[in-house]
Image 1 (tube, rainbow, N blue to C red):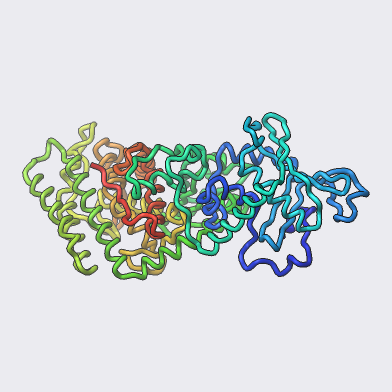
Image 2 (image 1 turned 180 degrees about the vertical axis):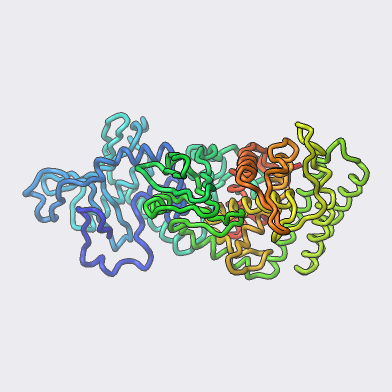
Length: 570
């Protein structure tokens, strides 16, 4: 029983309650419409706003305020009116409902549910899921001692009321739906996605459910491009030392000594802070309520961690992740696929970007060596051997990395050279850029992994260690070359970053603020680049593709997909 509504009422018999939560009437509606949708929303806590959900929320603004008082069943004859936003539950059925409007007269009550849009012109007057939801409300009212003859639906778009007849067939369908939803909650087994259903394109959870992508591995049918368009919100980077981030109404305000910048909160997907930047408590609260992560980096660009709200409540997906991580055989199999994908993508980047003015001597030999290493990975029997092959491939790849760098910038100014990969700290400009680009990629994967319900700190290849996002490091391996390395190559070859954009301190090299800003801009551009997914055939941005990959990993952990499909561009 909810105590949020002034009209909420709890019967004494309801105090004991069910061991599991009461099923909301709206979820019974969803179950009849699509069992997988109900499971994702109610049991796994997934949610995605859309224009439809926003319109539905607007429609309920008035009734959600609540007004009037619902009399006791034996006092109905003394009143003739209505009550709004009444919350009631049934212990017998294990359901709860916030009823938009209850009209009562002559000793009887009638639940009225508000719906956006127009009345459908079908014989029943309304679709089955909506009628079932009203029937749930009627059953709850009856269990609370009220007499209900029928219910009603009010369609705001056409301003029409549709009568809902509570016949035996509708009651049986409703009871069966309640049982089905409670049974799947007890089993914790996610229902399979609908196949080629016309319901999916309009579903706000299509990008989370991935119905056609999941079905591809069962049926082989090419997915429709159901994924919602990319969220127009973008990361907000704050890297001026001493800057202060605060909230003003629905906007974030960045204050520095030189200027003040305001950004609408709805336009921000995450906040990324570098060095000594402060954030006010109201701003943090607003960001956490909006589920916008705040990533913290050192002044040199190292990723320190992130602040989020309550995060994903999807415990089931983390349980599946832990089972996989604690299985040595599954961990090794997954680690092998990660390293194999990394080597293949490194080879692809070399093949694509080998500069024509560079000597081609050794190109084919390098590509052949990487191909041979990738084939040997499948025969590895332990992690130590796998680490050795990964190191061998890295030596081959970085040994030819300078073949992808232009000799001079467009302005004919001598630019960068690269001999070998080094870090902690990087000792030359190219390594400094690679380290920052990898830190940006770690942050990207850490926040995305957390948003889909996985634990970024428990990996299957990288071993757990304090403050180490091991799973993020796992998943980013195949993307190092495709995203971070290509980003560094681009800013060098286009002359976006110059040798004077670096500072040396002892043996360490790091980017100056202007150079770091240019690299971050190039990194974000790379994430916005559109690519064709090699498995699914549709075109998405790299940013959206990374989210899809993280969700596919969750599906793999939970057994819906036998093998995790890595992103391997041709």
